[in-house]
Image 1 (cartoon, rainbow over the protein chains, first blue to last red):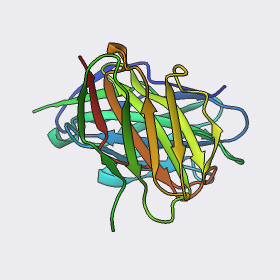
Image 2 (cartoon, rainbow over the protein chains, first blue to last red):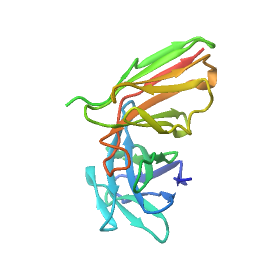
Image 3 (cartoon, rainbow over the protein chains, first blue to last red):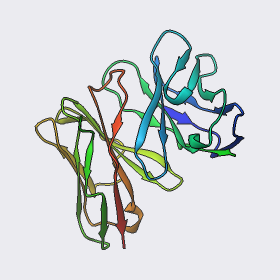
Image 4 (cartoon, rainbow over the protein chains, first blue to last red):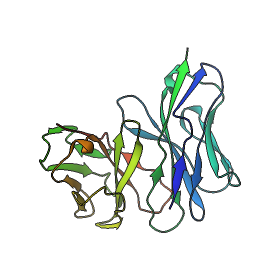
Length: 114
Length: 115
């Protein structure tokens, strides 16, 4: 069975500082990995994905994520946090190939402090 | 273009009643997913459709929950004899096809409250 772990329920960071939101996964075979963001009272939006190739992937709003196969991690990062980045972030995994469901983590609330 | 549409946006029902939640995916998307989001529980997978068939319905919590998809498009999630623990936001998402690399596109959800 595939699973995603987001070990931090909440991450607080000062505006302008770098941020990291952690994610580890478990899946049979190669993973497709995704990050989504949910702003207050809005639907989930796709941020970025890792499919294959470069381990560092870049996405919307200046976010990036690094795939680490040996550590089965896919941490979300941003060099300089904005107050407007405050939201709920979800990591998700799907096994490559075939018809597979997408499994989400429990979410991490990011609070950027002015 | 039009995104994923869910209706109703809010539903309040009495315990024991049946409810139907509807999802209109993005045109041309063959894969459709239902998730449930409860406070502090993250996104709980319910069921996944590829076309009209459901390769994975492992997440349905009980036999009170069922879902169907007709014409490879609209899907309905039905909850029979609702219980208070069914209160949550029910999210629908679609993607171009199952097993591919494209991200999920989510609707705004149906907030279900069972009183």
